[in-house]
Amino acid sequence: MKPESVVQIEERTARLTILIDPRKKAVFESLCAEEDLTPSQVVRRMIRRYIEERTGRPWTPGEVPAGGERGTGRNAPRRRNPRP
Image 1 (cartoon, rainbow, N blue to C red):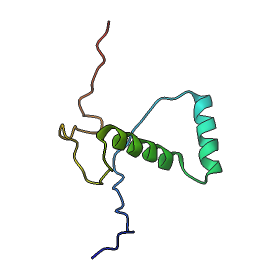
Image 2 (image 1 turned 120 degrees about the vertical axis):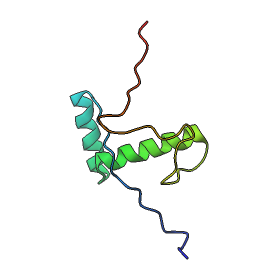
Image 3 (image 1 turned 180 degrees about the vertical axis):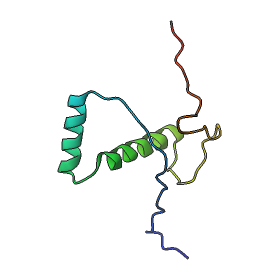
């Protein structure tokens, strides 16, 4: 039986690519370094908090979203915002 304090490690196999203003990126990376964290660690934390806020419950690694799992990667279908 696992102790309660053991946290399950999430798989990190998907890549998220974003475009960001270079100045904002530099400030973000500097702030992360001050906390001795990588930008990836901080972004994962923000995403996890967002999911928890939106779902109203703690994130569980391996959980599949209510709407089913959308594909990931280059061949995944992309949502397009309707043009006005």
